[in-house]
Length: 415
Image 1 (tube, rainbow, N blue to C red):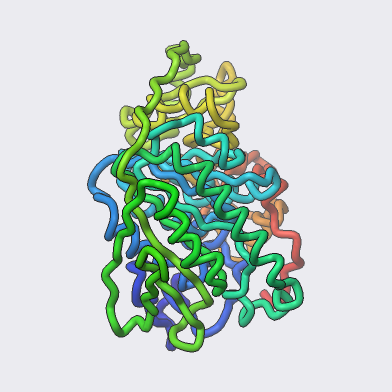
Image 2: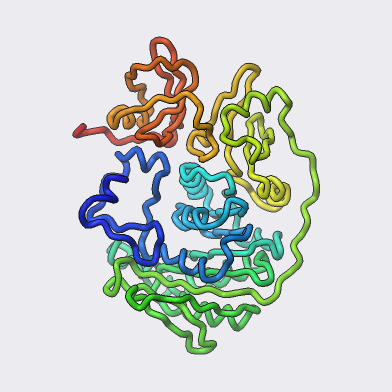
């Protein structure tokens, strides 16, 4: 994939600092870099979220950020890449199966300052005045994706637009109490319907103490600025015939008032014993930067802000993933978890085995590639410097610890 970025025809997405158009779609399934979390495949128009975030919040400050409708994780990975290490991202998905996919994609991304939750939007009202920034990429009728997915045309109807508009209002009304005074709400859809876009902005301005925030544009981007009929709120429309991207709509508001945040009830966390701490420390880069807790016989690694906030979040939300799971500390060693291998926390000093492309794909299929190495015991499996996962190297074989649920199922051909 990195070689692809230097190929002919690659151009940068103009409103994104790290987004690129490829001249053709490669096979991401057979790219070890994709499985290692080196990049995320995302629609170009939605990358404009970066510009809206930069225009509305101070990214140098610690922020509490909510991505409310987050699966599969494109906007969450973008948000996590923008916020500071001292910030916290809660990525939420209401559908259980999609929350699992979201957790897997954020595990690949490797950051520790992320929580994945599986909650209905109304549950966040139990966190009054909590978030500095909330992104609501709302479920919609999908008319902006007709070019990419013509089958959606058959599913579209005026009745569905009405239902989506009502659902969008419920979602926004449910989550707004969780936004702090002065906090920012970013609303987006992949719909062209005014009922789901401009009409929602007027509804927000009518019913809540929100101030619409304009976002600076470059005229060369060909993004269309739109104003609502009633309250003159500004939104931004992306039309596929005018730019390189799918149909998209986005707008931002600042909340003028809010409730006082609740303080969490204090409870004693399961701290590591000195022996457990001794076992875990060699596996971590800069271990003093993090806090460590036992949870269901596994070690969780949390940055300081998340460690301070996790009691409250656990009281009010169903948490699917928090921080980085390091693994299970036995009496003699740590049995490492895949989350640690995929994270930016894992030590650079650990034993490792580098694989070529065919071997890496065999590993990702959960097969045991034949390798020649003097390494024994636990090892990071790497492809061109990127971590893929764990293996235990024995004198006569390799035990592959890549998670079964993540393995490549397609047959490898042409190598």
